[in-house]
Amino acid sequence: MDGHFNAFTFVNRITALELGISVRGNYFIPPHIQNFPQSLVAEAVGQLAAWGAMSAVDFKCRPVAGIAGHIELLSPVRPGQTLELSVELESVDDEAAAYRGEASADGIPVVRLQNCVGPMLPVEDFDAPQSLREHFAVLHGNGSTPGGFGGIPPLEFVRTGGEPEKSALATLQIPASAEFFSDHFPRRPVFPGALLMNLNLQLAAILAAEITAPGAGRWNLRTISDVKLRTFILPGEQLELEAKLFARDENSATMLVETRKGGKLAGSARVSFATGGNS
Amino acid sequence: MSNENITKEEIAVIYPKVAETMADALGCDVAKVKLESSLINDLGAESIDFLDIIFRLERTFKVKIPRGKIIETARGELSESAFEQGGVVTDAGVARLKFFLSEVPADRFKTPLKSAEIPKLFTVETFCKMVIRQQRATAAGAAAKPA
Image 1 (cartoon, one colour):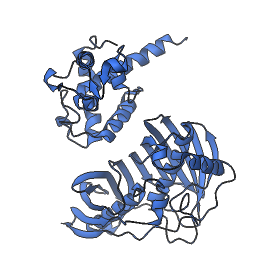
Image 2 (cartoon, rainbow over the protein chains, first blue to last red):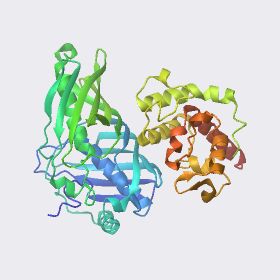
Image 3 (cartoon, rainbow over the protein chains, first blue to last red):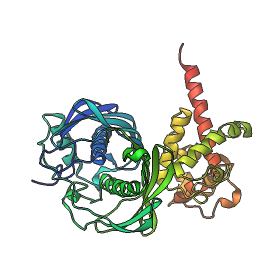
Image 4 (cartoon, rainbow over the protein chains, first blue to last red):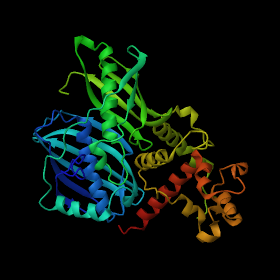
C-alpha cells in the first residue's frame, strides 16, 4: 500500500462540510495495531481541520502544526473504535487557520482542542495540490479505505539525566527514513508534531512517576496547554527533550516539556497531571 | 490612517492586559514586558510568537486584528514601489514608518532598512495601538449598523 494518505493519515471520511466554517468526519482506528495514543487522536482532529482549511483556500495553502492553546485528554481510545471528529474553523486565510475541535468514540468525548492555530504555508511545498484535491473528493464522497496506519513506529528516547522529582532529560534520534515520512509530507518530509508530543508525554509521565501522588494514588494525564512548535524537525535530526516540574499542589502536578534542536528551543508545552479520573 | 490621536491614557488602559497576554504567549515574566520593549530584540519573539500574540489579543479584546497587514497599514497611501525597492525601505517609506511607529525610538531605524527587518521595530506599544485601532474600528462598525 502506498504510504501517501495512509501511513500517517487519520481521516477516513468527511461527513459534513460548511466551507470555511465547520467540518465533520471520522476515522476508523485499525484493530490490528497495539495502541492509539491520545496525541494521535488530537492529530486526527488537526488533520480534519487541515482539510477544512485547505478546501477553504482552494488548496493553495495548508496549515502546519503550530499552536494548540488547550487540549483536554478526556478518555483513552482503543484500536477498533471509530473516532467521530468535528472542527469549527474560527478563521482561515492565507496566513493562518484557527480552529477548535473534538473527537468522540462510542458517543463519549475523548479529546477536546481549543485555541489552535496552524500557520498556513504554500501547499505545493508539501504535496501536489491536485493530489490533495482528488483525495479530498474521495474523503468527501464515499471515504477512503481504512487500515492504512500500521501503528506507532518504534521511537525511543535515551535518558541522559535530570534531577529526581524535578526534571528528566533525554535525547531523541529522529530516524533518517520511516514510512510516515512518505505521508508527512510527500514533498517535504517532516517529523510529525504528534509523535514528538507523544514522546514528550512519555518523558513527563516518567517524571510524574517519581513524584509521590497523594493517598497512594497515581497521576493521570489531564491537559496539555500552550503547545508551540517553532520549527520543522527533519529526518535524521537529533533532539534534546526535557520535562521539568513547573507547579504542584495537593492534587495536581504541572510540567513544562521542552524540545531543543542544537540547543535552540524547537517546541514546548505544559502538561498537567491530576489524581483520580479515567485516563 | 493617522495614529496621532491615540492617547497615552488609552494605551495605559489596555497595556496591563496586553503585557499579560504577551507574557503568557512568550512564557516570560510579565514584569519583563515593558511598553517600549522590542518584541524580537528584547523579548525574543519569533514568527510563531507573533501569530500566537495576535490570536491571544483577538480573544482577550474581542477584536479582529488584520494579520500580516501591519506593514500594509503602515504604508498607507504610498504605493508598494514608493515604499520599498529591492527589499529595502525607501526614504519615503522610512518617513512613513517613523510616523506610523511613532513609539519606536528614531535610533532603532537602521539605514538602510530592509523590509524583512521591519518587525524588529515593533514594540509592545505598537501592539497596544493596533488593539486600540481595531477597538475603534469595531465600535465604528457597530455604530454604523442599522438598529
